[in-house]
Length: 247
Image 1: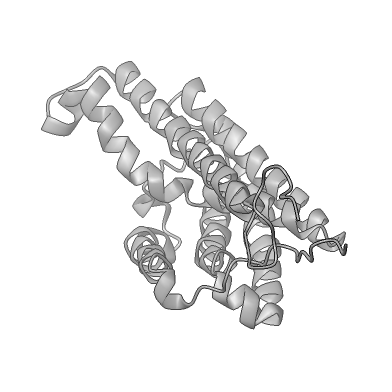
Image 2: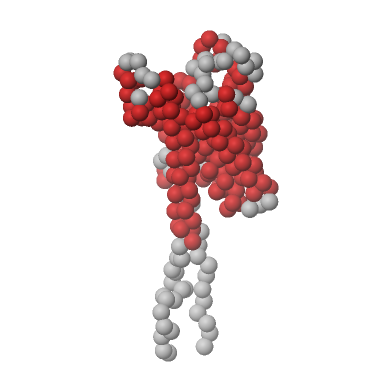
């Protein structure tokens, strides 16, 4: 008696742009964020900087501007990296946009931020949070690139999802900052004088929340995606589990 014919589980069906409704809003959010965040730095005037330039540190403002410029490239190209349709139908564009994301965004932007993060004016909580973010941004990018070079695409995908989550921490921080201030230093939002140390701690908490929670969401998404791809698929050629039926 011939053994039942089985076929390997088929790959998940390709999803079109219509089934990825978050791609367009994500791109629009990136553009909107940059439109509102970049103008103070376009004229290279330290007086307009939203981050105090710290005149005693001659490298601070140039490295801040460099980080913002490279980070803007990373933010825009990150949308292309998480667009499955582009990766599936235009792999060459995906690869080149990935190189742009890493070599004109993450790597120089991460190195630039490490030269200024330890000198943040709001104290050790903010300094430690931004420094850890910069280190992890570089590490995830390096591991993602190395996995791609070795054609370990499952690992590459996972590391790049983590990298993109860290890239978007700057956007998340715009939401977490007022939340943390409202919880820990409500006077700072109402116009009343607040204790500088409390405000500094609140801002520091928002820095940590912006990338730690992003990473948690990324890991949750990766775990769910792994369960989906590992789910067995029954076909008409596969027998249901259970004891073999008598013939």
